[in-house]
Length: 197
Image (cartoon, rainbow, N blue to C red):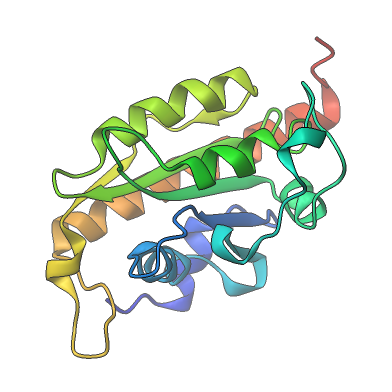
């Protein structure tokens, strides 16, 4: 799927940084492939692609409610104005690797928007719903539109790129357009009316 530069700019929040977070660490995983597909729809100048498999977090014994020692990606998460979580569905939820990344940060997520792109044999919808509840606890606003990809490994081209049908591509466009709206609204709110509770 090719996306024009103008189209990418219309989906990326104006002047806002978007972190696309790939949540799987398995050896033969689809996460990076799906994350690259999402990234291609965003302005590369405003994009930060975070692969959980490449992030080394501190030992969990050092974690306490609301934080812990600063992780190597804390500043990157804090710099983002919006997030796209790319996650597989494992056993009707999302993987522990993604939960661990989320738990190691607190203020970095607050009052920012996120959309979720999940995948699995049946589309990853259970992972989406479980992730929404966790993100709400961190004052993250999730978009109503999320994207569930059913068996995306069946839609790879001969270079291994994810090439879904037009309906799926439209779903991503709608999710990112909603994310853009929330990113701009919440950035203004964080600046002008900071949440103090």
